Figure (cartoon, rainbow, N blue to C red):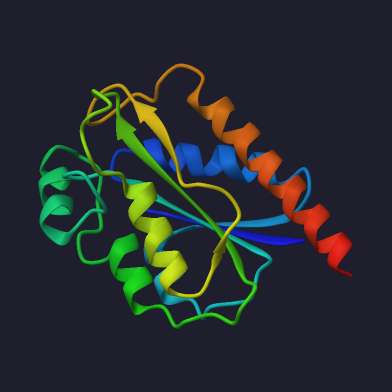
Length: 175
């Protein structure tokens, strides 16, 4: 099974979750992990499972304006022109049966606050024709720049291993 993890990260938290997800997938799949800027430069290649993630900004997917604001809070270079939103909006529809999953990072907050990058990614993936392998999942960061909440990297690894196992089982029974 082949899997690709594409992520957008400002402060390294979403990148760390993407790597933990890749670790969980590697138990059952060949995995490629790409920052969204790199993914935008490469031609799309078919995979059995595409997992896409990004940080929650202003209750949803980042925009150029929110990425510029994030860049002002960091000494590290942050791509402001392209994020997961733009990458998915530019993607071509896929053939039926393609599978995907969505994740996001979000600050610990009261549950009544709306918005999630993971849910926005999931909606865009479905519009492109993907069938979601699981409900979109959010991983918690303690503050805007991090760190990730205790146990979140392990939760990401376990989630991905379960996804990979389920997808591999689905592929094997389909054959």
